[in-house]
Amino acid sequence: MTHNAPSKDPEMPASDQEDDQASVILRLYPYSEEKDDPNQAVPAPNDGSSLKLATTLTNRQRGNEASALPATLDTLSIHQLAAQGELVLLKENLRKGENLLNKPDERGFTPLMWAAAFGEIETIRSMLEWGADPHVLAKERESALSLASMGGYTDIVTLLLEKDVDINTYDWNGGTPLLYAVRGNHVKCIEALLAHGADLTTEADSGYTPMDLAVALGHKKVQHVMEKHILKLLRSREPE
Image 1 (tube, rainbow, N blue to C red):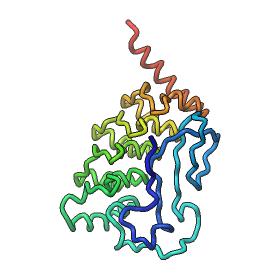
Image 2: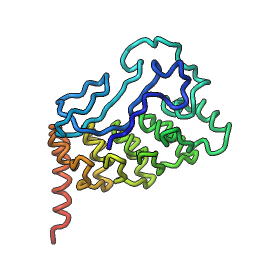
Image 3: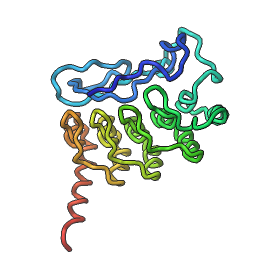
Image 4: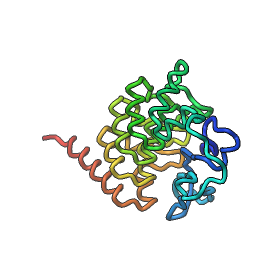
């Protein structure tokens, strides 16, 4: 199963939706290309050879000029403020109502998840101090840890793991944080996940284990890291 990727930001005015920040957070499906086109989401071919993550970049990331006036900071939702790391305004907005810190958007994403998806480490740290729940799962079982792993944000991954989040949590694709880190070729992130006990045997819906996926994508360094980890595990079990 694939995620229905969001094409719009949470609670954004209709006039700004097409030209402002749009993000496909998680999607895994078969593909055969050797390299990703970073500027567009790619439809799934039928060969079933490996997994692909679709991404949609913002106008700013593409280097384009917005064709509509951008939303001003005082009109952004708490989810958008978290994603952009606007800590001062985020804190002010959180004071306007109860339980806003863990308020889900229409897909079940909390402000903490949006900050994790965009690599906003200081926002993550502050929200955790304010009482944000890092264990929340969205409607399709996405987690802050999976989002951070997908982006290769090792500092955020480590911070979340210190909060005892489920390291092997899986979403509706069967994707785990480790599988997403492998897909993105995020070596440091993979090392952090393995050091904290990530399961190397978990399969995605496609049938791929993390090692299978690394081999299929030609991620040699990732393969080496996982092989080294497996060897270390085997040696630790040898009788003295």
